[in-house]
Length: 463
Image (cartoon, rainbow, N blue to C red; front, side, top):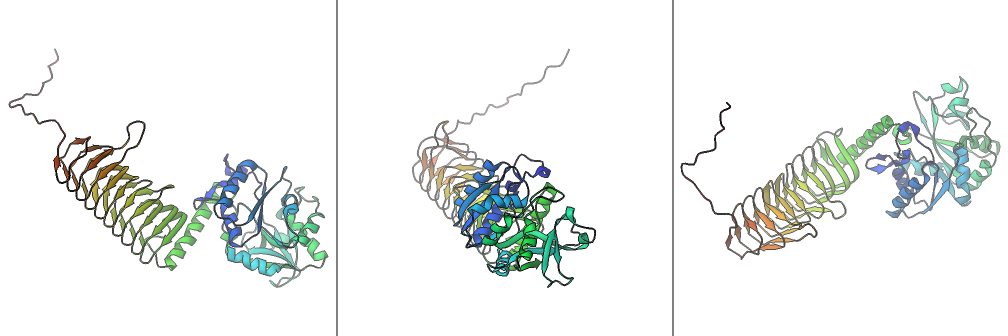
């Protein structure tokens, strides 16, 4: 269900498209459905339906194996009314799992257990005990025991003072045989405090029809927590990151501080990986064995091979092209690797060096204050401080080739397209516009002029 406006978010973005862990809230729910091998997903939209549906279609295209459908709820008259819009798209031979688009952290294993409780025959509810259940629907049982039969769900606004003392709440998630759901939805009315059609009313219909109603009770509140405000979104973000941090540490990753660790995409780690504080991982990132990520790095869409070290304050973002970092490479501090950067083994990229769409072969070094764009750099090249490849002529990008063992002095400009021959040296301060011979020295700068006994201009005294 993803039809709500989310007024308390105070945002023009639909609530279910706000991001948690780098993905839309609704994306987490759709991904969970995919993990359950759902054959059909029906997303109920209403507020900003076109925007939500477009985002969902993109989610499904990135790996969903299910049949994606949409049902519009206009106007929004309650959860039961929402399901009435969806039920024509559901097959009677299946089980309907009802999920909320703003409840992102429910685990697939929890839902598998709920489906097992349903077993195609029963109405299964996901429940939780809360110290303060204010605002939630209460699970009403036939007795005080946890094993007592579920008789009804009473919404908070309709509950008596006695019923409000019940601490077991309904999470909003249920599994129900579709053939029964269709029948019960047709019997709903809106005779309640909110004049809405409550989906929870189907519980009393199940009881009257002699269908067993069971509650699968969990203890992890984060799995059923919804997002209604920026504060709640931030709280769930930390819960999500805490869960990820502990999972990585259980795999053997050493985190300097799990409270200062953020994954906003997919992170894969080999053995003996070390990650310092305040590091952010986005998109798809793979870290090989023994990789060390120092403090305050932002790394996105990148593969880092074994033994590489990323020094503090480095920013890496491969976007669609990706970034590749070879074994034993050293990057940073304060380096920037942009899309298409491919660093070979033992490459050194130092402080305030930027690399874009360039390949550096084994042992190449650019240690200080340099730019390499659209370049092919050979093995053991030394690229001097302050040097740049002038790769853009105002209309087109051109490539610079620096062959093996070349040495580029400080403060050089290599105007592409140009090739620096193997073993060649470019003198500091040179602007190179033509190919250089292998093994030669190229110097392209004005001749030094020295004037002896030269006096600087002096300021004239004011009258």
